[in-house]
Length: 178
Image (cartoon, rainbow, N blue to C red; front, side, top):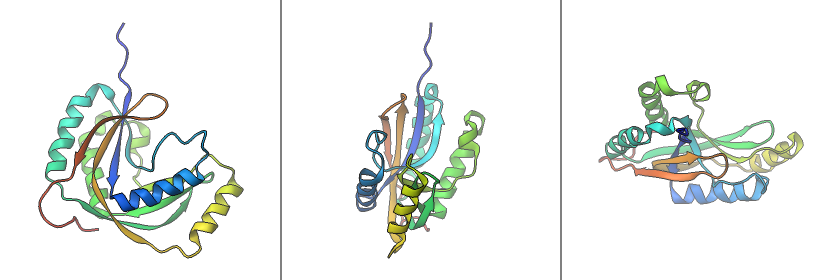
């Protein structure tokens, strides 16, 4: 009997300073018993694991022609039971849209929904806890500039994610416009 391949998750790789800042917040505010991951910006939640080779080839080609892209960590968004940082980047939205069009036939419902880039730093807490963190983070919040430096593909096996492949943006030219 053949077992199905685990789903694949595709994330944007963040510049080291933005990653460190967001991951420190995630480590401080995500319930430890539920926090099995570092900070991440998910592009697709469940790509078919059986297509690993094809997806990897697509991503390698795409990354080779894509320059690092400008990101703006623009604000905060409440998640009900958590808090996320919103990310603005027309280049990221365009890249995700291109991939969604190419993979439309194999996308699940969650990945066919609209894309609102964000990095979650707290989730699975009570509404009052989330509201308190939101108020704390909003006090004196200043947007900052960051960069998307590549793509990371992960195996999802029900718990912590396992690395499958990574693809650095290596296209020539300046950073893609925000």
